[in-house]
Length: 293
Ligand SMILES: [Zn+2]
Ligand SMILES: [Zn+2]
Image (tube, rainbow, N blue to C red):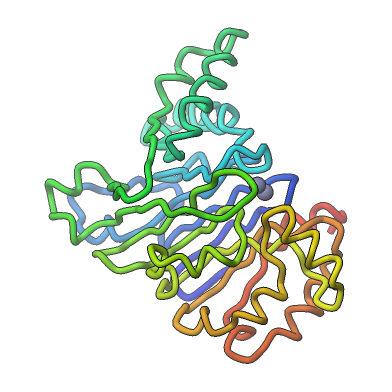
């Protein structure tokens, strides 16, 4: 199952502490068709993946993979993603074997090291050559589509800016701009205070916000407390800070903990305040799978 919005299709695979790998692609995009450099319109299409705690099939076709932090449920399956990419491109020569990865500067060298170690144990050398790692730092902006800059100028393409999330360990979220406008944001693991950092204010105007929400028991103070202690957002934070979401078009929550049932999550969504509820979606595919549905 996927979440289908007006402009995007979301492969909504996420369970807090277990595995997160979320694919976002523009609607009307043929998932396996690479960008045509001669077609200016095609540069406007997005096909990206956020985090790789598990290597979902969307990693085989995406134009870029963004990794937020070093917790295993977000980063442990990069080697598997490279393998999937290689096998797919071997079977279909039109596919690009190169996987473009963006990772925080404090994490990128360790990720590359992990891939290298796997090579030592017999994996193909192609694994390393298919990894195109960009080590990102705060305050810098990066092009998603390399040669588009020369062809069309920077205003016509997607750029990405990492931003600081407020998690228990260092974590970067990613804000994607289309023609200079904030369009898609993915928070990584974080607390709600990230939205109050002065440098993160563009987040409040995106078309699509993919936001971590780990705790869901609205009536349970202890649940709120343990969620905050581990550096995560609780659904009560969404309710109590609903005004920050006013200008955001769509909100997709990820990182639900597997201790909640799908029915319970649904019952909480029903209770969200007006102004939030009608544009609020939850990544449920992994949770449904966890309970065998
Ligand atoms: Zn996590
Ligand atoms: Zn984490």
